[in-house]
Image (tube, rainbow, N blue to C red; front, side):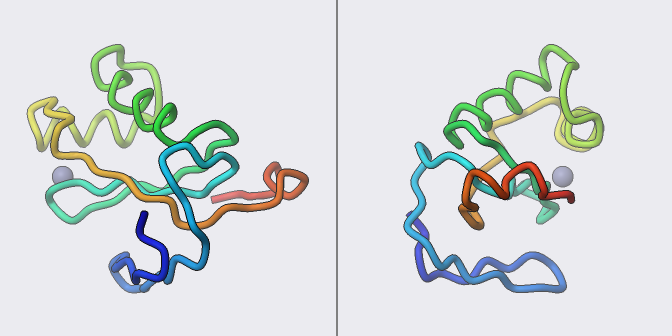
Length: 100
Ligand SMILES: [Zn+2]
């Protein structure tokens, strides 16, 4: 997808070192808002599944509170302003140790 690209994450730049697709699992991902804000999360399932959940959470109100709140308050609940990318895939045994 974006292998080898640099993603600008505010004060830091992250280089994607692996080949990641929307079906990749065990990834740390970033969701970009149109306003240049971003949200970082992790999933042990396919990235596109997790991204879909985030979008649905804006409707159901169940999910990451800050993401949901921001979409409602600043973007009128419009989830089409969201895009996502994988940052890094981690070995499954290490996945649980990731805190962010
Ligand atoms: Zn925003």
